[in-house]
Length: 308
Ligand code: TMP
Image 1 (cartoon, protein in one colour):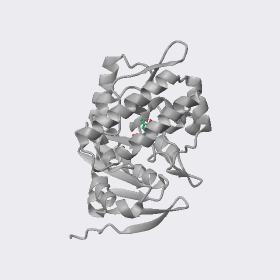
Image 2 (cartoon, helix red, strand yellow):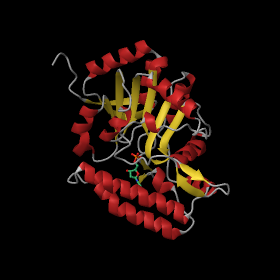
Image 3 (spheres, protein in one colour):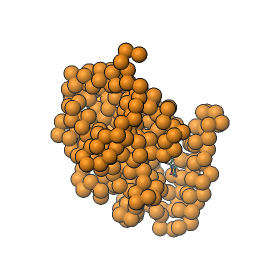
Image 4 (cartoon, helix red, strand yellow):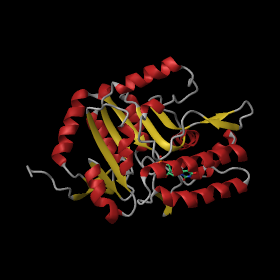
């Protein structure tokens, strides 16, 4: 066993709040930390899931909203229709008996129908701002400090989500009150016409089952130089040279977010938010560091400070 820490759960206090953390193999983690420190901030990038990873799973005892759930269309009929689709497809998303190819088709179907309802029922930028202002959504404590540290050190952050890019960016704007030049949101991005009405979505649809492939190939810049193909490819190749990764996710499938990258060292940090007893074994093996019970990211902030 060579002194391997057998994945004990530790109760630690970070920044005044109690957190439960599990490290399955502390020797391996130490080796990874040393390797990333050696490469320094110039070789590091952060890839993070959004919903229930950067945001809280529960807010005042209620389930926090996802970027899809936040968006309220003016005509309630369309919100109801999207909710009905959610009730039908969400259980299928987590049904272990459906083969992957079949499930992929179902997820494409779900995202296709939802995007069509958003276009048909109407979405405006104003509507997005109002929806976010009313939303039950909050970043985990320490997210702002983490993004600030990474910006200061020049470490890029890719927020990768099968949700809606425009909502995620508005949540960043309203809840963090500033933008970060090192943050890119890779998610489904809306195209508005000259009157500010949603007309279509840009590029390939990102759903839960293809979010795990070619993260970087799907990356569009935060602002609208989407057609600036050279700028975009330069940015992507710069990211591909950053071969050390700090990855944050709340599903084991989130580990695939770094698949498009030929990384040297990756430290994965997981957040296990729900049904802890059912998933603890698989999560503790999958992630280098695992936080339980809707923890803050102060532990990640401490780690990032150490890495850069
Ligand atoms: P992600 O945030 O982990 O990338 O996944 C997106 C989540 O969005 C996924 O669990 C399903 C959910 N979703 C909705 O809540 N409403 C919808 O209309 C769609 C298409 C997805």
